Structure formats: C-alpha cells, structure tokens
Image: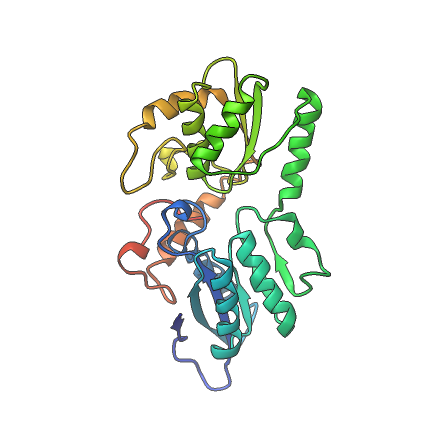
Length: 294
C-alpha cells in the first residue's frame, strides 16, 4: 500500500482520507483499467473540487492498494484500507469479482465503496447484497439488452463458458458443423484475440462464419492514432507471430459496443495523463503513461 499525504494545509483544514484500489503491471489490463492508465483521473477530479470550491477548507490524502483484480487481494485490500489506513471512502476496485468482494467487506463495516470500470456485472446493482456500493459504471444488463435484439433478429441459441485457448478450440470444433454465427463476451481484448486465434486454427475465419463480441470499452477494434492497442496485436512478452492473420480474421467479427464518448473527453484524457506527473501520483518508471489514459 502506498500513501500520499496532502500538501501542508492551513490550521482548521479537514482532511478526507481516500483509499483507491487498482490493478498494476498486468499487461492484459494495461489498455483499460490499470493504475498507469486511470489514476490520473483522481487528480483531475481533485483539481475540479478545488477550482469550484465544492469542499471549502478541505484537503485530501490518498492510500493506494494494488489488488490486481484478484478477489482475495481485494478483500484484504478493503480491510487494510478501512482498518489500517483508516480511510473515509474507497474508490475501486475495477473488476467484477474484486468489486463483489470489496463491496461485501464494505457492507459488513457499513463503509462506502465507489466502484469504477468499463463494465461490471449486473449483480453488483443489487442494493440488498451491496447496500454501501455506489458507482458510475455501466452494467452488463444494458449490453445484454442490445444482444437480445440481435438474438431476436438472427435467432441464436446454445452457449459455452470455457475460455481457455484449447477449450475454445474444442467448443468451436463441436460448433462448426452446425453453427454459423457465434457470440462471445470477454472482458479484455487479449481474450477476444485468443478466441479469434482459436477460430483461425480451426479454419473457421471464412465467409461461412460470423463472430459477435460484446464489448463495453468504446474503442472498437482499437485505434492506433488514439494510442490504443488494436485487438489483433499480441501483447505478450513472447508474441505468437499471428498478428497479420488475426487482423485479417477480424473481418469476420462484429463488435457490439456502447456509443463513443463525446470528443470533449479528449481534453479530460490529456489532463488525466498530465496529472500522472503531479501530486498525489508523481509517477515513476513504468507507471508513467506512454499513450492515452482512460
């Protein structure tokens, strides 16, 4: 856990202690919810609070806990922030299983948890299970509604839940003699790439098949001009060398995504990236952004 104390404040200034939970240094999450991509938003929000005088005579301290989108670590992180760091509120985590665990801890301690992410499970919207959880995220419910319209139009059916490369190949091998339109839902681009790689190896990236992906990131296949990593690019330390083949195979894929955010947010992205070099972040090394922030 890392704690950033506030700048010296005048007498009588109250201090609000904020805990924040992020994944850090995980390549599959670096393009969406990692610490280096998103934490600058805290400073942007903080500057807005100061500029508009929303909380006069108030300053903030921050305690960062890197739960790595791991449910067990999120549980420990929530307890540590509440009991040891004695924060007043927790912002995060950013993955469904982690949020569920942190929100359960929050419910036990009657403690506020503000979750954030690109998309989280609709189960987290249940106020009976998670009475102290609040968020600004979109849930999977609205995405499933959009998918339902596609289902009604094209009459889809059958499902599978295994997502390892070999299990995907096994499922695709079973499907390819009977099915022509296959729908999948993965949280990160690396998993969608893994699916297309399996389809490629099963020789299913032909005109006989269409693959539909549910996405909630507002980046589509990835725009290099905006600092995004395209879906077909292998981000592993040892790439598989299939980028060009998978890029071609993406012609057989459809993405159901939410509407692009207003262009005014480009200003926010720039401010958020610049904020990485300011208090309370003061980024160093690999934590400093090299592309767009979220």
